[in-house]
Image 1 (cartoon, rainbow, N blue to C red):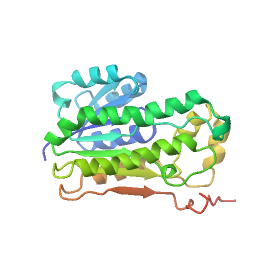
Image 2 (image 1 turned 90 degrees about the vertical axis):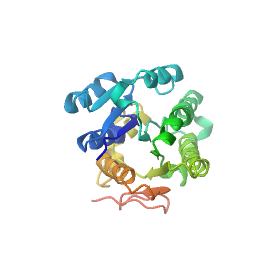
Image 3 (image 1 turned 45 degrees about the vertical axis):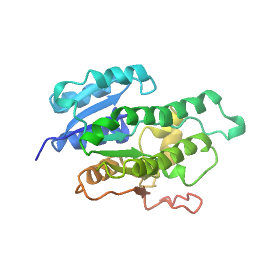
Image 4 (image 1 turned 45 degrees about the horizontal axis):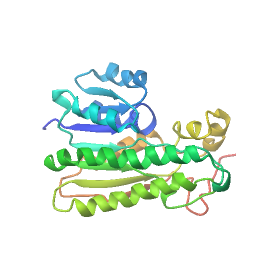
Length: 251
């Protein structure tokens, strides 16, 4: 089998780290992108620099992004798959009480950075008849109190994915939008400014989605036969439903 290369953003934790590890462990070359150099070092330490190339930069810094792509080592330049995973939610307040700076950071990270990286890699992905997997969220479909801009950014990602499919028609490039529900990562810690009790309370007894679940899903999508495209995958833990996003908890 021809060796392939995948670029994963937000690869230092959560979904991104699990996706990077899954693909590296399965024989792909991985370009792992994130801000935290020490976390990326754990990946290269585990799989070796011949399997994982760590690319540390802030996804919101376009100049740094371009520099990282321009200086990829020889064995990592031919990108066959892009996983736009980097993203975050900040704050839980309703719109009228929000922090505007947090709104801007979510838009810059979840929207502007995603479309910038995608545009920069499209020529290579078209040349390689590759695949794009965008990690969105059920929050882009089902609103909830305090979701405001975070949900809006994920709705953008969902619609952008469908638009990419339309524009890339006939190129052989596949585009999939993965929309997870409740998942236990650092997501809530980041959103609440490090409130561990809030994170633990949210996930307690709920059997949430795990990073490995998402990694396995992305692996399946990326390795489908070239004539198949999965447009959207909406995933929830069994304990969660769209009926007010209820969560059934164990006593």
